[in-house]
Image (cartoon, rainbow, N blue to C red):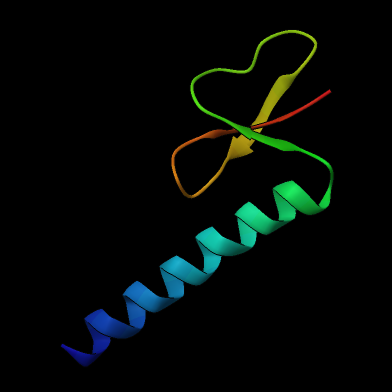
Length: 53
């Protein structure tokens, strides 16, 4: 159970880091697909698309 808890915390941390990295680089987390002039560069932890111009 401890290993499972540690794994869960690590995954949440990695997902949160991707989310903040997306926002820190002036990217946008958008539900669904990215529309022009934006294009997809990754996924935010909430399932939204991380898009940039």
